[in-house]
Image 1 (cartoon, one colour):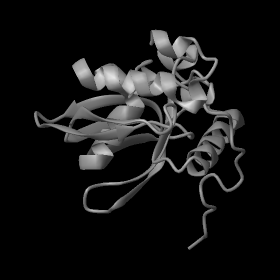
Image 2 (image 1 turned 180 degrees about the vertical axis):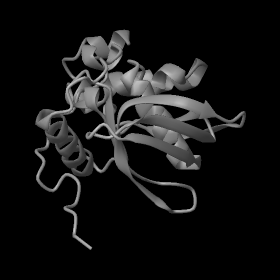
Image 3 (image 1 turned 60 degrees about the vertical axis):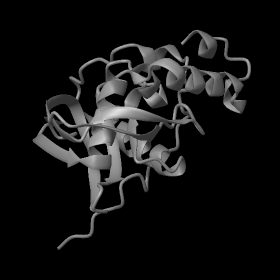
Length: 187
């Protein structure tokens, strides 16, 4: 059996897009070029996600408006899920909605109880164009929904209402990374 390199081991850490950056708030484009630049993007996304201690990362979080995300995320039974999806579609959820803590690498240091389905199924393809279907429950289902949302131009705080939304946005405006970023106040 051939040893495979660890995802991200040859990647470059890219700058993170932060709340208020226009690329985070616009739907991403469908990937049509499955050449070396897509593989490089995925490799860089893994490197960036690991450098930021994340469990998932969408391409627009590194400033690229393409429908791609990577993940290295446990489920509620501590089973590790590692991979990437190109042109993902959330195709199935259950009726059980759970409010749980959620954060985002594009809103560092901010977390809020966010409602998500407890089961999610995503379909798409790999960087080679091979079909992929990923099913997740619990925390991993939350991750899949979170990353699919990013590709639609939605951040998790958009799912918050009332005092939870107000508290998260107040924290975002006061965060050290928000200084000089007028767009954060208006999001």
